[in-house]
Image 1 (cartoon, rainbow, N blue to C red):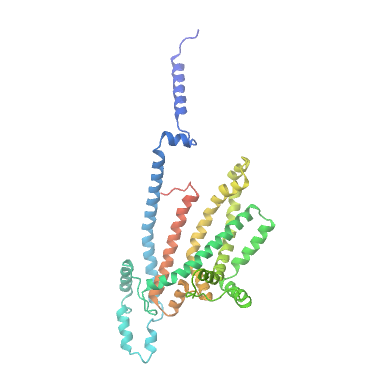
Image 2: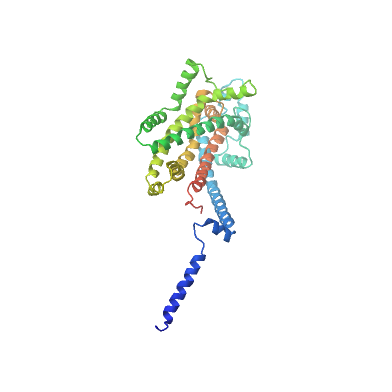
Length: 371
């Protein structure tokens, strides 16, 4: 009979204790055991994530303040140094005494130094006063709110149409690359984003308004109808401008969606998911599309403010009383308070949609942490 070895006995005791600890340790994938044994873990995780997002949003908003201040300084300086006088017509009108024009310039401080005028404008903006329109003789915020509904209707509907076109067409083209569907979709996409909006708008007017007489080509804000007839008339006059913007964006986004899905669908984890026997629909929707949408979110978020600028041409073609037509008419009339307010709103939209894109990253990709 072998003698007792204290060293071997100590090793066996340590191994048994470690095995017992491992048996009682929470497994990473055992969600039921984890939450039942430690019910405080889930609330703590959710609270920590919420705090991280809140700190991230607060930090981004604080960073946005100097950015907006710098943008406002540049915009105000450019508009102040630009040629033109909002009261120039009064000087050429013989029925208006020169003292009237001088009194108006003194009232609005147009002869003051640029820095003084900027500080006065910034203080008024912080108090919610966006200025006074020299041409329309109303407050700028009231004027913008009157035009905002038409612009949001057209742009929002066009974005929904663009996403409804780009996502299914781009995904199916990537899943079936170089097929007949893919070739036809690529051809139409190239044609779609190669044509400018003014050409497509005029083409739609000639086809659907002049020759076929199906749709009105002038957007009316005062439709003399009630009930369902009002909605039908609103739909008819919105079809062409929404289609012009939606097809342009949809064609461009289709190429990006296809390229992004093609890049993700060749990765190893997608091959592993297929090897496990998962249906192709689950592999594409759950494992491919969600990761492929990350660069697409960046594109959509960054192009949203530019779309407001692109809508200027479309609003001019279809006579839509929106923000774009307001900006054009204000530039032609040298209405600097309106120009400053609209361009500053566009700058705020750029920062806002960049922040929205960063937030969507965390939802699409759980590996991204807000720090």
